[in-house]
Amino acid sequence: RMPSVGRALVAAFWPQFVTAAVLLLAFACTMLTQPFLIRALLNFLRADSESDIGVGFAYAGAMLVCSALSSLLISNYSRTSQNNGMIVKSALMYAVFQHSMRLSSAARHNT
Image (cartoon, rainbow, N blue to C red; front, side, top):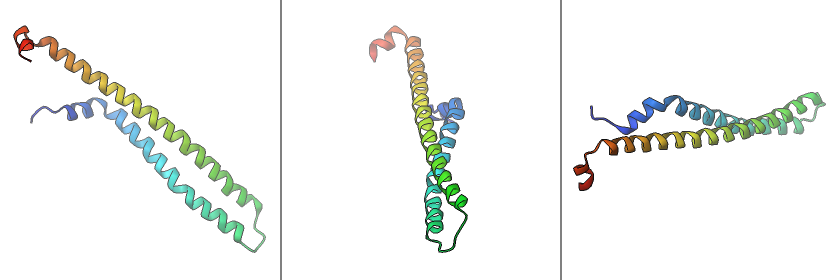
């Protein structure tokens, strides 16, 4: 197999990439949950019968928790992604620098 920078980066930094993916997946789940909570709250409010008010507060609290959690998840994802980008950029710059140091003076002159 031919050497690949992409495969080397994935092999070296896969835990960071997986962490970012899990954070983004959890954020997507919280964002998809919110419309269901809104529908449940609206159905509760439309109900003609006297329902337990605690159920309504539970729906509202779940919406609050879901919104706060989605905000925390997306900010953590953003920080993790930016950190991953800087780590990968540093690793690539180091690899290019190491390669340029190994070049002979004649090879450096020709490039």
